[in-house]
Image (cartoon, rainbow, N blue to C red; front, side, top):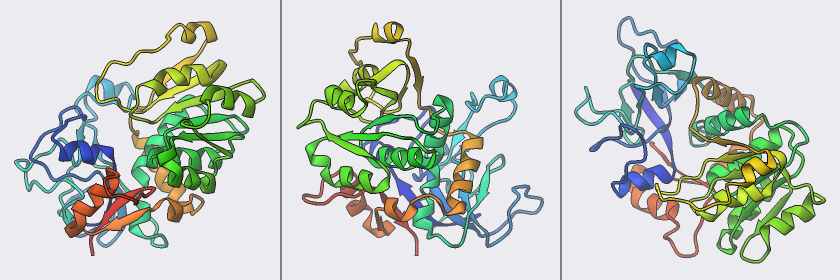
Length: 329
């Protein structure tokens, strides 16, 4: 049993609120919350989780079966995976399988990752989106000195920018719209070397100017807009890489796909985290080298969930945040 300290919120929480199901096997009703930090409250006799009562841990939201052909092949994308906050409803055992609850039941085959006591739990809940970014950047093999453009200054885009800086990327460009000014300013503080307001500047020509016409080694799409999918193909250099990680609500997207073979591009999809990237995220946070305080954003209690969701959806006039989370006191 885990006593939850904090849980981060993201766009999928908004989707759940509106009854949309973006995760394979997602059910309702369910206790939401998947970016979970807490303390081990109790252990069943014989539990083999590698933790002790009272220890602060991050919860890997993915439970992999370890038995299917996909797992046995070494792939992280288990064909029978279960996800805390999504696929285990109120009718499964205790029903307490999400971070919105003050307590949650931890099931077998769960990876728990020890976390430092020196950083507040609300900041440490960054581990889950950071694990996604680590997995993505490992797959595209971003190298020191390389250039990257990140389309979308939401919390995932900002986490990407900060991690690109940690990896030693050279030119780091974050793009957004005029309404994103607060987030674009945050991107500069987190490691971006340049930001571009696409409402006021031509994106492709500006990136070309910033890179002496070479364009970028890696183009990342983290928006919910359709146009950015194709823009990535324009922004990547000859032989460059493209990472698509922004969901478009299952809508079809038009793009100039000929650019992929003509430019020799490598295109990858950002598909969540792996067990290994989860461990690496915990290591990065525990080392204290990642800007957790600047990425914490606004923290609410469960009683303030309506305020939290409104801020997350940018439905509160004049207010914005780099990230939104809940903390249980």
